[in-house]
Image (cartoon, rainbow, N blue to C red):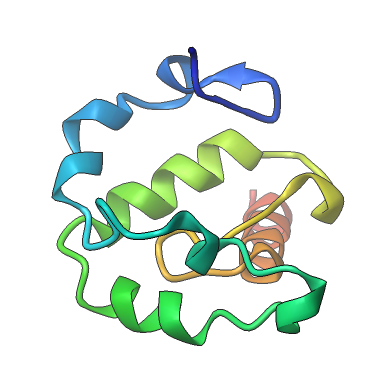
Length: 98
């Protein structure tokens, strides 16, 4: 199975294999990073794990590249210590600055 983000193969977004095994979340239940409406979209546990992650920058870069130019509805989960709303704001700010 090929992992995709927004219908793009991960390999076309970034070389995920070079950093993902080093992530603090490796082996952790991924539901922690994708809370839903029932959990109140709370990312507290995920944020704590991201805060000590040695590859937080690579993870954020992965998400920003994968989600570039997409709407808030196409974004999901905690990546690089950021929520979908955080990344949307960063993406919009980078477009304004460009």
